[in-house]
Image (tube, rainbow, N blue to C red):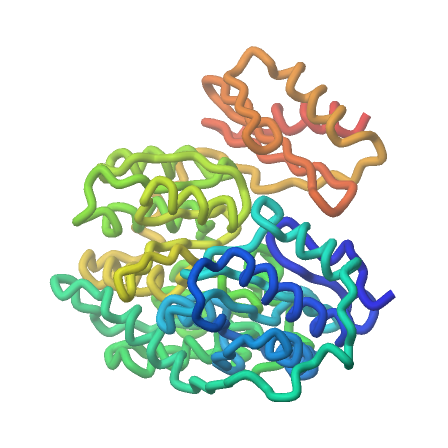
Length: 466
């Protein structure tokens, strides 16, 4: 079989190269995706798509085959080369393309690769709007690998200056009333694509000194996994922050669509806490605007959104769903517990909603510069609740039945079933969700005190593992 159909996930396409994903996968996907978009395009002009990849060795070959598939359908290609995912999203907006493909597997190990597909203005293709139709057509549609190719290649244009354009546009969001003072920062890009963005970004900010850990692009991730959500991947960053007496540390994932922070004392600052800290600055000129946050986040986040004059809106987990909600609500920003920070980016009269770690960094540096306080001092009041983080349980029982049992046990609280089951009580809340891809149930508990949190965890554990 040329392709494992299980690589088509709710939010992207991802699998092991030469086992789940082959060169034929890339070619077929190029043909099918071009047809999929063309069928939904009302204008008569030729289709234009942005094409990009990350630093994985297999990306070169997959891009070549993807390009052949797109060109066989007459697609005009804008090749922006090896870039981060946010740079790719920005390119679809900047070049007013009909969509695009970036070949990446984010933080997954070296043997993996994959594809993220978007429509115009970086609108993601997901399980809700066409991913599974594309899967079925890739698997079943008769797409000849050789005989269907056009004799002449469609137009292709290279745009090597895309990263510089993206960084310039992000820096335009600096607040002139809050100049960035001299800061000392440590950044760990984990041999991932964030290295390019970080260098371009900080080279343009004269008052910032930064130490760059693992800047070499290497899809084998020789130093540690490029997943800042895992505490163990922050060990080197924390040690370097302490060694350099730095103001804070930054950790990024493989394709640079997630970011995490470490304070000046080497303590992890969860993304929901970082969001709670920054939301007042983000809403300074946008009172009353909706700010989205996913249901795993601490209650301190919606509280701070309200205090800052925003409208807190709870959402499900998942980037495509959150981006859809931002578009529907005309939201300014969305904060996801996993380290995705989404912003409304405007260009050429259009809006795109996508992850922008650089904007988070700008606002954090402005805040530190304007207050004169350390990051540890600024965030200390925000850890007002005891939050467990995600606790994963491998189970053999039916996941839906397990979640229902937890729901029934804690049913006296307010029940929210938008994504798994979240139940809010007076002194605590808990969330139980099922993994889409593994026999795993995920639990989060937050409480006003540690004893309550640990008691609720224990009661939920007994139900989940029985």
